[in-house]
Image (cartoon, rainbow, N blue to C red; front, side, top):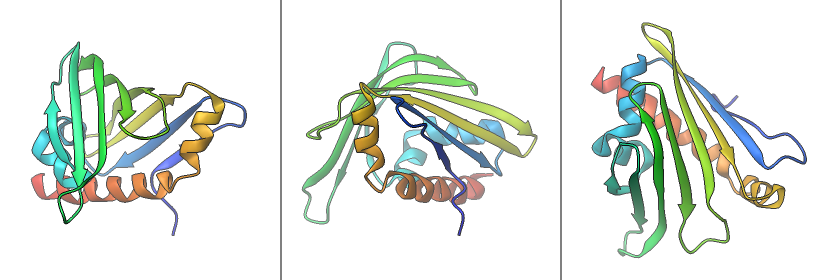
Length: 155
């Protein structure tokens, strides 16, 4: 089965581009990325902080069934334009990956469809390639599938 979330990673470059078209109005797609309760549902993580504004910050964490923290990430929001763009940093805590810079662009295709483009820049080609060795693409596609399902119920 073909994944709907596409990742383009050119050889010898320290960035990648993620694209996904959703059967959602632009406003609903943007809301799914900015409303903590919705983010928690499709990402399967707890939103500790999500300050959707220029110079804001965010922090997420995921625990296992025993309450042990298995994933923690945070960043700063550098630009926030409603229904258009979020520029932020992304850093996983206690992981061998350095901070990355993400440009999220939200685009209206029709009244009921929209597109998300994420351009991520890594510290080096090696760091980007290390990330791509993880089940990154499959996990992101699964999360975006959940986003589509959850947002459909809100529509």
